[in-house]
Image (cartoon, rainbow, N blue to C red; front, side):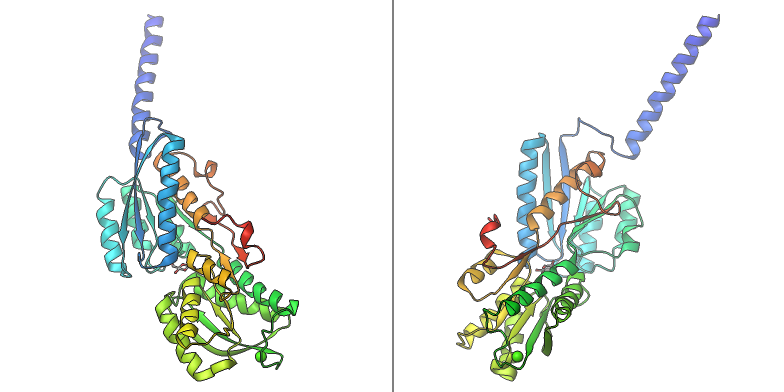
Length: 349
Ligand code: BGC
Ligand code: CA
């Protein structure tokens, strides 16, 4: 009788264990080796942005490599927000109703992540934001939300250091009019973007902290766009002519726009122009001497982290084993200052 009772208890406990594991499986993905296909939705603020399209092609490459190394299939569907948060929200909400394992989101407006996170939480679909950083309070609304990007202030500091090094080396005649100050034009990206704000602030701080005096001729916003920067700089050329000694640009595309403007005016002696990103066309201008420097924003590393993080989340694995997390949810890739002196060291393909 006693033996029978023990047997009953074992059967009941086993039964409870089976039910319990079943529940866990339904609520969150387990460390499940049987999952062979991962479906990722990628939402871009616009495809019409050199850095973002470079990041996207690197995402594809990283996914293909991971398929081979991990023996899983990764399906990526990309959506173009075309600069409209309303359009992007519709795309995201539609995907939340489908069988996506993870959503990777490059917000149009980085201040409106909250409703998206709340909906994703109800559907238990994790999110990896990238490049356009939501505010911390929003990211903290749910623990299955991450951000992959780069420390924006660092890119400003490095851009400033390129100018400081050139000035201090004495090899370049940056201060063309010899008044002991650098007359400069600032080309800013979109207003409100963390990279515009911090790159502008830290580039200037870094230069002035070294005791170099700056004289601002103009502050122009060109929304990261080459053509907008070209027209802003041609206006500046008309107004300030040869007085412009330095152009600090929040990204490479706008720096290239500045170069376009000088070429269009037929001016051969360009001011010192610096950008950020290290895109392929920028490297070409660096080689030809029109661009003095840039700052490599690690699109390759960021793409790799987005894929690694997405796969870990989809498979219910601990993200900490796959990416370096800061504060439990940030993956930040360092920048590298690039000039002709160290370009050869970077393996840029
Ligand atoms: C890049 C810009 C890009 C922007 C888009 C920045 O980090 O430097 O080139 O246009 O992100 O959000
Ligand atoms: Ca000067």
